[in-house]
Image 1: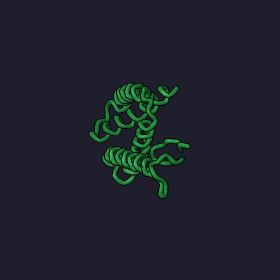
Image 2: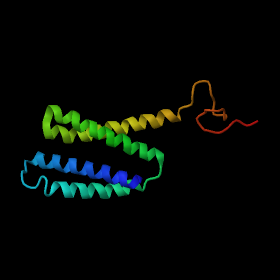
Image 3: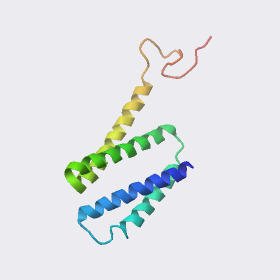
Image 4: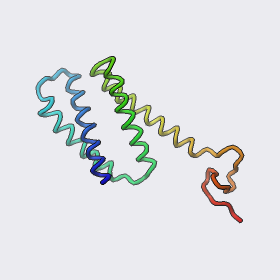
Length: 130
């Protein structure tokens, strides 16, 4: 089921990216007949490969990058058109990756007052020894 989800997500992202590139170069012929099947096919293949990932931290990274990319594309397209859409996707994906890194770093920090001795909730995740 997850692989089907990633295929759909990858296909949609591939179509959006290919159509944005098509408009960036000003090509009027083939935006639907070429960009949609090629972008959808390549995106679906990438989605299948992403569906094989089992590590939860990597899945959260992918979610952050995809959502940042989608938000950046919309935010960039509004003021700057096609060029802003493509650069917004890249910047949004980067911001999503940075947010993931901040999340990962914050989950590894010990809570104030707790030591690495194995108290519940400590950074090393061990249970207390009695």
